[in-house]
Amino acid sequence: MLKLQLPTDPLWVKNVVESNIEELLTDHAFCEQKAASNAITLIVQNPNLSDLVQEMCDLVQEEMEHFKRVHQIIIQRGYTLGRERKDDYVNELRKFMIVGGGREAQLIDRLLLSAMIEARSCERFKVLSENIDDKELSDFYYELMVSEATHYATFIRLAKKYAVDVDVDKRWTAFLAFEAQVIQNYGKAETIHG
Image 1 (tube, one colour):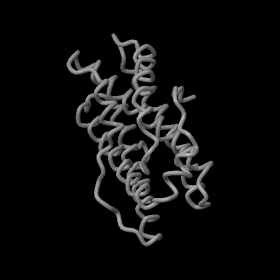
Image 2 (image 1 turned 90 degrees about the horizontal axis):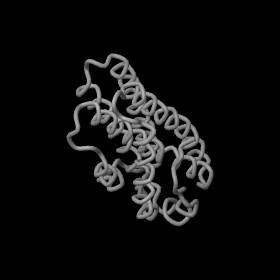
Image 3 (image 1 turned 90 degrees about the vertical axis):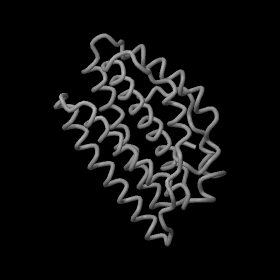
Image 4 (image 1 turned 60 degrees about the vertical axis):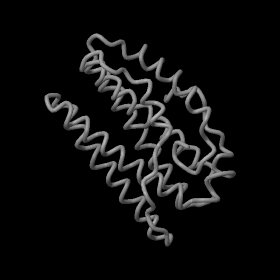
């Protein structure tokens, strides 16, 4: 469904993640916060698109609920939420976005970037749920995998809805190819996209 071209090696969980769960959880919490911020930005930039505004309002609430749940796990395990981390993966993906080109092209690219981040998060959550030796986190990441898949589909659907002059399928295929090049450099850190 996600059409990602390069899957995450399950050894990422065993060799990297399990040795530093605290770091993964802190990174994950901030990923949820950034997803909420992204949805707010889409609202601020597109107040005239009522359907988008409504869907992003729901998304903001869901992402902040995920943030809260990750934070609760952090506290329950005796950790504290560390400082926000830079997400190099997302910053690299941003380089593929159209600069200029009009509001429509920029909106479609923002929606497709959001879909890509949700798709990779979904894929990583699946790998975590299937490979981590921690029943609580396995169940948690399975639940979030389903949620991320829904977010991915929402962003793709909105891109297709609001595209007039942009061929969304063609642009998505190009995004997938670019992401495959970017993700080759990741899978070595205890971060959701790292």
